[in-house]
Length: 109
Image (tube, rainbow, N blue to C red; front, side, top):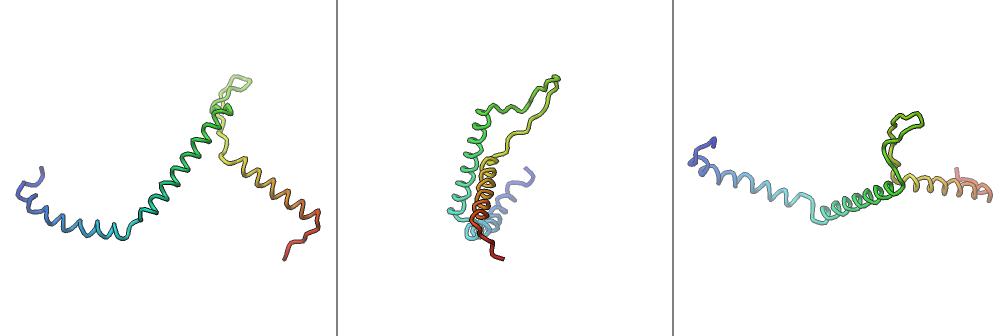
């Protein structure tokens, strides 16, 4: 040990007096249990979504390496998550604009 035993025994009450107020302040001002639980649930949901996406990608037959007709290896980028939902959203917006144009609705300027 760096310090002799008598010095450690002498120093210990001062360390308790130093750290105790910091722990009390952190407990009073830090995140609450509700916030911590909400963050934990968000992480669990994200992890669950990632696992579902990985299973879906694997079942679609994705493999990161592809052999070309010439016999060369190419890296294939994985599909983007939620790409289909974004495409569906874009299609829905385009369809709603087309319907508005057919009905003669003019945007407010």
